[in-house]
Image (cartoon, rainbow, N blue to C red):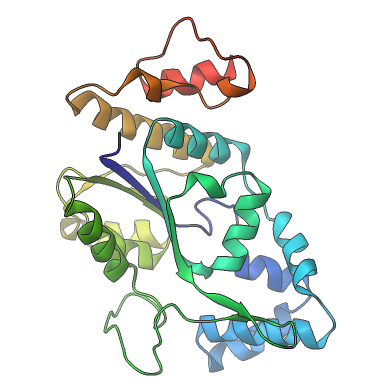
Length: 279
């Protein structure tokens, strides 16, 4: 299954909220955020919010504890671990930031499931203040995309991922997301790939307006159970088509290492793998 690459957005795709809004709301900065939003790009505004938190005496540790409370459905955790157990190359492309994403994933034991996390970088200055930086330095140059925000074009990032991986062997991609920038990433998918848009979110609305622009197959989802079902079934589709069949060692259920070292009957599909892990 090393030939299947699953790329996921983070906010409202892996977690059930926008991580930026979660921190802003939890620390009582919603009104200030709304006042400044018309004056700053979103990424720059979040850096400004970190300065505000620091001035109020809030520490990075407190921000981390807040992030650990962000909602992440157990079904999503199971889906990610099942896909990893089946040998998929899991990656995140997100306009959040590395501190927010890694803090949440580590809390839920998921950070090691991902081979790469592409997002806005962070740093801590000499005063101990968290700084949120743009992935793309839009003050010096523009990525020219009309869909994505100035600090990150997901279409450009998907092109880079495909180029870096496809040079070695043929890869098939599954992209999962909810936002307008995820539509831009979906434009870079090819025939044989799968786009998984969250229904009734911006990406879905853009697909409905421009269906002929998408070359890949489209498998929509609305809730976490559907996300899991569609993703695992789509991976199964690649497994059936893949020759030779996946090695038997890759079919170990997610939780079986916590049970015992022997498995009497190995499952043949990812869905069976997941079901066996729950039995």
